[in-house]
Figure 1 (cartoon, helix red, strand yellow):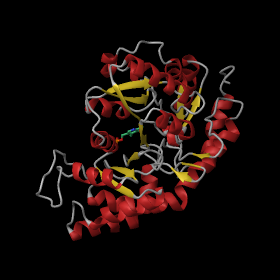
Figure 2 (cartoon, protein in one colour):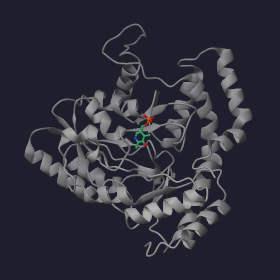
Figure 3 (spheres, rainbow, N blue to C red):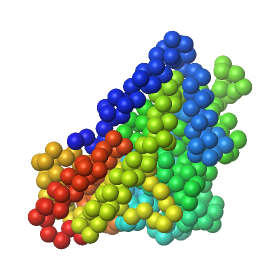
Figure 4 (cartoon, helix red, strand yellow):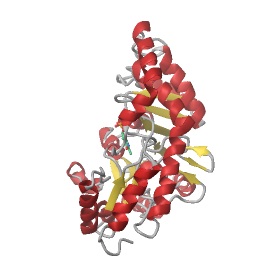
Length: 379
Ligand SMILES: *Cc1c(COP(=O)(O)O)cnc(C)c1O
């Protein structure tokens, strides 16, 4: 069994993907070819934002937006601690201070109450200017924008939606990557919509920001390519990757997104009452970047993981260590015990295989192993 079966996906799409790549090679417009623009238009239309600007990866996407907003030294940005490294890394890269926020144990997403608590505390500290919040759509589920939005407005903070795992999700029909003042996604191969290498995109309705992002991602260009009006960088999506994504986006929208949702329903139905299954709030829709269950303690997780691995079932732990406890962020001085939910969840989460080419029978097989395992009191 595969944790995320990219080989089967390629086999299924091979003819179209191959033709699409070959076309790029024949046209020889390897950088900023017509496929890039075409993809940006399709992505913006799907997400429902005015602009989509593709770039080299999801990390660059976030960093470029923070730079465009002029966030840097003496500024504070609020990030969840239970996420991938990039979310806080980009804050540090632009010279600002990441302020770690705890999560909701049911959704694994940023806890709005704790967010407001940290905002008030940071304001009182007055060491930093508070500037932005980066909510993460973890495991495919949009963050709680219903509550985070009003908090951001109350304290005049920008929202940067980290939709690296969230592409395809929605809240009452409004699509992920349209919730913040700006949003980003990643096309890393294992993400809900992945390419065959690195890739990323930025989304916004703000014309001025969009123009600035286009400039920053191409060496600070002005009206013309060799007119450089600011310090930027080189962060573009390759034409070949855009050509791959064009085909993959079609498959994603035609059946992949629905397929993973069906599998998640099957998991939920089977595992209900056996282990703690992920909670999707009313009106929310997940793109199931991961299907993550919560065990009672680390020993239980170890036992279950060993059992599953022993039967050839690949499982992963996202994430072993919350960011505030990572060595790289030791300088932030956040002590063990400060963000109890993130710390506890890191010890107890286990992500099970999920991908559009998985069968219901495979879910059933995993369910049988979990059900049959002698671990007591899983829920
Ligand atoms: C993958 C990921 C990123 C970064 O994306 P890259 O394209 O790998 O740079 C950022 N945030 C989250 C939550 C991610 O999962």
